[in-house]
Each structure stands twice: as structure tokens, then as C-alpha cells.
Image 1 (cartoon, rainbow over the protein chains, first blue to last red):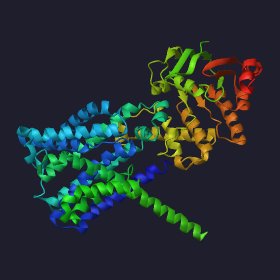
Image 2 (image 1 turned 90 degrees about the vertical axis):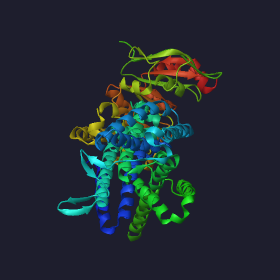
Image 3 (image 1 turned 180 degrees about the vertical axis):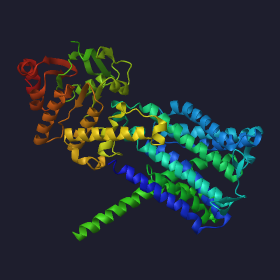
Image 4 (image 1 turned 180 degrees about the horizontal axis):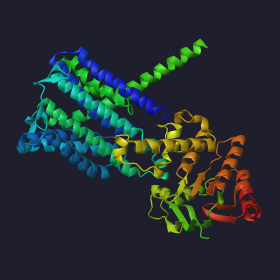
Length: 335
Length: 252
């Protein structure tokens, strides 16, 4: 009877798996696959950011910095040094973990606005470095990224593959890969939340004093979740670079950091499935409103503000609450 | 027998205000020790000093003979000291039992690998922690709320939940800051019974309380504070007959 949370966790994961694998039934052109893949990879980073923001109640306005670091590290090692993509991704993630730990230790002592400003600065510094180190990163013009490979076996959006005897296009193969990665990201995040470590993280959000008097070293857990969310961003960034085949410093930009945070807030802080919905909505929206591209940041700002005011819990939790209320109302009406 | 908690000449000033001044006393293991006094006498400040939330201006606190001067609250918990708060500190983003399971934090050895992949070692530990926590919730009298969101619980139930969380850490000494505040007569009687049962398990209880009837009934010794200073210290009988205490309380 490891009740509720466990059941909910399993249901959420099964539901997600069904959605992920059902998507190819409804789309077929390469552009849509590309978009779906991009959404899945960004959603993975958002799931990681939600651990920090939604569960531990800390803020990071510079998370794109870690996404960009992962992307560039993998890009540089594979294209300039001939590394295979997987070791590049892993070493990059370890490097990002160390940097996040070193940076997080002092800045997580800050609270509220101060923490926001400090993480904002971290993001800016990373973006500036990527912009200025032309010799290594190609500067503002960006750099090409070799296809993702598993020790020589290449996964390219332009390839042709066979899976269980079926011929599938590279676009579909990439989408399925990204979907599986996202499912794994969700599974790991849910395991983390529903554990002693997860409770310690959530208690930092709930009551830091309460946590400390029962023995939770709150500083340690804040650093830990900051590192974990940075690693999520780094891994997803690396995959994103390989998928796109070309990256610019915009992957580490302030705008992208804000987009990530907006996805968390819109979808529902502390709801793993919710923030994925947030990512889907905010990635699709610009496609629908392609004519208003220059207004994108205004729109995101507006969404962030309206969400905070009218549904501070976010899309999914608010919808779930409404549903529960209606259900109990109709049950009451029957009685 | 050495004292479990020893307070030597402890003072705390906020700016020019001396909230606690030159307080000394000691609590033996197994006692129920109460701190009483009028509002603003410095009782909660004293508790915050003992539990490491405040740094004293001067003086020291010893737990089991060790000075706590350089220890954080979580390190005090590791050494067997736990507490509840006058302003309840409940994690409202969790269920009732998760709040109590948080109290098991120190007894649950977990690393990132077993956690991320939810290996059997973790599931076993969680199951045991859940059983123990459910037991404790039953013990304090809020067993019916297991999977209720903490935010949906009543004030009285949350007060008991906070005690269950403190006990979950298996403390040697537990400090309860005004556990009876806001409770009605029936709930207070149940609380008195609960404190007795906690003490029977060999856990030292320190209490800040306004309810005189409750305090006089269950305490082995009392400390009376007034304007941050010790007015009297002794058994309930001694305190009851102390002229200074009578004067302070009855305004003589």
C-alpha cells in the first residue's frame, strides 16, 4: 500500500508513453517530426528545471546557460576532437555538474530576488563567453554539430533506418529517440520526488526551518537539486545540438531561460506532466502565430503574468482541481 | 548523572532589548521540564537559542556535555534534539504522512543511484518509514489523516502532526513550543496524556506553555522567566509557593 503518489506516478508515465508513441499516427511530414522532437528535448530540460523551481522552490533565470554549455561542449568535442557523441554528452554533463555545484553553493544562500539576479548573471556570463570565444564556438554565427552517434552508428534526421522490420525515416527515428529520452527523464524525476531525497527537496520549499530541525541539511539539498537540474539541461542541450545540426549562442540566451521558466510556471510548478504540457503549448504557440514573431517575448511575458495572477498553480493542477470540484458537485447532486 | 541539556549564563539581545539575560539551568534525561512566564518573557527566544536557530550574545548551551555553539539545527537533530514551533512549521506542499516521513530523514540512508532507479533497497526503506510514520500518527492521535494533504487539515490535527514529525526523528529530547495554544479543553487533556506517554518512552520533554494547569500537572521541574531573567526554578510545588512567582503572575 505505497499509496497515492506511486499510483499516480505510474499512471502519469503510462499516459505519457501512450501520447508519445501515438503522436506519429497523427503527423507525417518531416517539419512536424522536427518540431515534435524539439519539443520533447526542451520538455526534458523543463522537467529538470521543475525539480528546482516547482519542487524545491528555488529559482533559476539562467538555466539556458547550462543547456547551452551541454550543447556546445558536445558540439566542440565531436566536431573538433573527433569524440563520439555519448562520451561527449557524459563528460559535458559531469563538467556542467561541477560548475553548477561550484556556482550554486554560494548563490543558493540567497533568497528571492537576489537568487533570481544571481542565476540571471550566471546565464548571461555563459552566453557572453559563447558569443565571444569565436575561435572555439564560432561566436554569434554559431557552429555546425555532427550527427548524433552511438559509437560509430549514426542517428541523423536525414537517414533511413529500420526498426522491428519497419522502414522508418530519420525524422521519425529521432522523434522516437527523443520521446524515449523524455520518458526516461520523467521516470527519473518522479523516482527522485517520491523518495527521502525528494521529501527533503520539497521540505526546503514547504518549510526550511521544519526541514532543518529534523536533520535535513537544507544547503546541501539545494545544491544537489541545482546540480541535478543543470545536468538535465546539459544532457538535453547536447542532444538538441546534435539533432539541429547547427547551434548558435541563442541556445544559452536570456530569452530561452525565460521561455524555460515560463513553461514551468504555465504548465504547473511541481507537476511533472504539467510542465511538459507547458513546453508543448509554448513551443506550438509561436508556430501558430508565426506572423507576430517579433512580439514573441511580449507574448511570453504576458502569459507568465496572466498565469501568475489567474492560475498560480499552472494549467494542469488548475484543470485537475476544476475537474475534482465538478465531480464532487455532481456526486453531491446525486445524493 | 550528567545533565542532558545544560544552559550556562545564556543571554540574547536584539539591539538594545535583552530578550534573555543570564539564564542558567539544566535538564536531566527523562524529565519533563517546562519553561513558563508572561508573554514576552523570552521563552521562545530561549528555545530558539537552545535549538540553534539563534546565536547567543553570550553564554552557552550544552547538549550531552557538548557545546552547540557551532552547530546548525540539522546537526543538533543528528545529536538527538528535535522541536515543534509556536508558529507551526508544516510543509503544506506535502501530505500528512510525508511530513512525518520527513522526520525519518536521518534514519533513512539513501543515495542518488538507488533513488533515481528506485532500487529495492529504497522501496524497502520507504515502506518501513511509512509504517513507522503511520504508527506515530496513530500514537499522537491523527492516524485518520494519513494521505490527506497537510493544507487540508485542521489546526489541532496539524499541531499533533508536528509532534509526530519530531518523534519520527527518534530524539533524546524534544522541545514543544506552546503545544496547547489554540486547543480546546478536550484537546488539551489529550495533549497532556500524549506528553505523559512520550515521557514514559524515556524521551526528555521540554515545554514552553501558558496553560498552568497542564504544566503543573505533568512537569518534573519548571523554570519561570520574567523579562528575560530567571524568576524561579524548581518543582511544581516549590514554584506554586514561590512569592516572586505569585507576585509576577497575580500582579502583586
